[in-house]
Image (cartoon, rainbow, N blue to C red):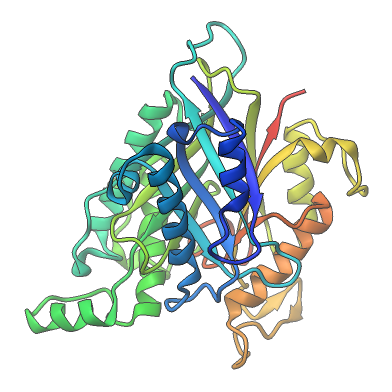
Length: 368
């Protein structure tokens, strides 16, 4: 098997022209596409329809190229888009392809491996609960199996996209006497992220299923995964899971590495990830080695203490700008400044994903 990674920018949330050109030139085989991850220029909140707009545009393009339907595309391709390109961030999306017709390599070094899985559609009362945790954990195992990853230590990044409870769903659920983790769509997004994070931890064996219950959600920030990135929104119903790791048998020219960031200023965490890839770029964001990076994936969260390295920050108190928009702009600028590239997937809402007040970074790069 062979994995490939292609990154494209957009002039608006529905612009898929660069991918269309790459397909026409034979640079991307649409039949090999397994997942998209990207940033759109919306607000990243419940009413961010730029995410769904891009999903629809891509489904229409692939359905036309492959002579199939949007429904069939949705059943096999994962679409993960985070709204909000604050600061220097560039609207873009990365296309992940897997060619399963390439014979497995024997005895070679581990290379980028990609697996994906879908869960059943959870009921509104299951979102943000142990039921969703179990769904995601099972899907992580299925995605690892598809990728041929047998050791969880070889997994470097797990991206999950889950749904949230809409106001209509909440009203219908309450009418039939169901109990919800939250009937507020914005809070439901957070609960969905938390359940997804615990699902990844359980799926990777970072935490045992009997070692926690729902009272740990939000209340125990010391429980976290350094490899889980969870997004949620109204544009999906089920949980979609993509696992990125390095595994034998893959002949791709890419590898993936990850590292945590202790806080929003942790430039050393970024350098550590670059070091793991053998890219020497400390203090030089024009280093030729940075051209090897094909994809940058970041998760971050404003520090709940209201302080950063002993100094006060106002992200949680700003009534004009959502805290997640603040942190995406700040961390996006830091990572972009190190990498010398603004095409970075930066997602907020990092509850139980990375150290409290910090986050995590994964880089996919070509091998030398």
